[in-house]
Amino acid sequence: MVSTQSDKHLRLAEKILNEYPQCIRGLKFFTLECGCIYYYRVFRNGLIGPRLGIYRDRKDSPCEICMRPQEDWEGRVVDECVVYTIAFEIEEV
Ligand SMILES: [Zn+2]
Image (cartoon, rainbow, N blue to C red; front, side, top):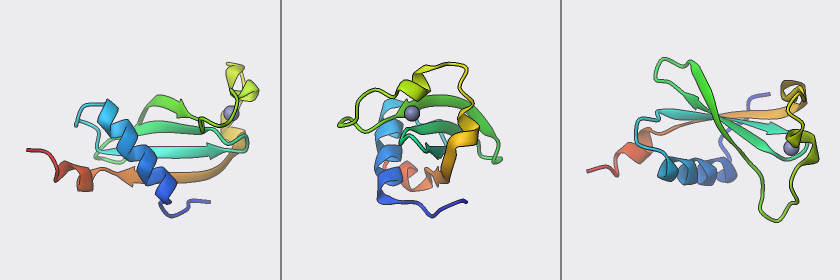
């Protein structure tokens, strides 16, 4: 079920990393059936950190399913993807 990194994931990673300080080593994306992407911080040792946020395409309306806080989102995951940020660190001065 783990896919390769898509352009969408890489664009999203770049956007997220611009919003957060450079301490982030990696991001894990879970794409849900409804089209939302939940993203979590990944530590250098591979452990998954706290959820950083939920991404949804701007053209789509707000997700009614994900607005319900008790919803079991893990059962609706259709794709997982990890992006490491080593490539982005090169740009730091
Ligand atoms: Zn959703």
